[in-house]
Length: 515
Ligand code: BG6
Image (tube, rainbow, N blue to C red; front, side):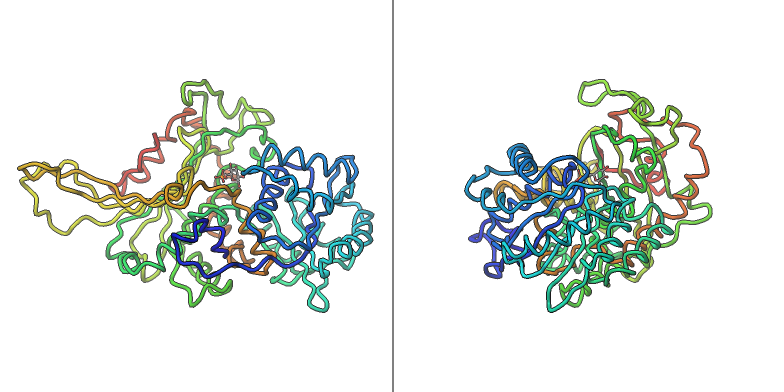
């Protein structure tokens, strides 16, 4: 993990010194004409140049079906960077890279493009002295992951000889259920070593997500309280205002559970619940993450209905604007049974967390874009303030804001000034922007840099990707085979289906308000 990207103001923080530049390499992007490349990957590469972290021995080869040549590709990327860069682009800095951008046109299942790539790579490598290192980024539809890797291997492009590395970043979705994730892992591992595979989850590139580990393990104050003696329950929310947009094709087959839970939501849960690793080396952290997932109580039998809630939005209003229902979206079946909202209850059966439920929820067309982790503490054992108006007394909470605001706040009770004892909740807040200045990264910088230096800490290992699917597999299967008769069961702009509130109220708890 790269703390330089985390700490823009070296005066404010203890720094471990300047970070070395990433290794020289050629960055080969499959899906180079797609949204991910232009909106996130190229702006992230540019930010690495600005942070002085990208090697000068660097070139890009884009591969896509779109009919264009290298010159046109350079022009397009330059124009896109103008639109999507997260900071002002210095032309002289971009120009250096731009001259080392190349394009290969073709279909990913056409063996010719791999031959072309095999011819092009040494030439491009030589021009920038990339030392034979190649980072392949699969920014394509998931159907292509296995076959691209297989063809790269057939063309001899994945072999690591004489210290030259070959690494592959695989985007999500990593499979569509446990069985397909296992098959994908097996297929990738027939051509690559596990150490060459970087399964990306962009949530792990977010500053505040990485900060969870620092918050917990760099502060002596927090960790002694971070367990079932003091914590009542944890709520993890990823709510989105957007609906399905133009992704009906993908989304109507995926649904919110597949799209968000085995990856983003369970990553957040794991970071919240993980035991202190023996070091921050990739495998120490990933071993501990795997243990959390292994301890999730399987959701089976009656719990499938009791602990997992699905919702689908109907027409409604968001921020005063009318929004049509999910079933009216493009490329969505008019009688679709796909969920756009999920809420679940997980139990982690280990010494630290036994008895502390972790509730998660995520959905589209909700009133606010917000990702946060709310850790609610048990109440004080006795109330000394019975004469006071205690109607406002609540449990203390630690709220880890992931987006749009990034920071951490702690809610406490305080005495309202005056002669009587009256109590009111107050908040202590740490805001990233206020403290460290405007965040200007896309979230992919750390992940790309880490891959270029061979640090896999923030990437999913094969076993954790499978464990994520395993945690939801019974629910996926049940939902696939049963129609939810009351769909659509929440209006766009509302906080989700009533059953989601019931999930908590049955336990005497309630969700933090979304509006
Ligand atoms: C993606 C999902 O992985 O994450 C999208 O496929 C979702 O459906 C997105 O909108 C959310 O990411 P973020 O960073 O905007 O919270």
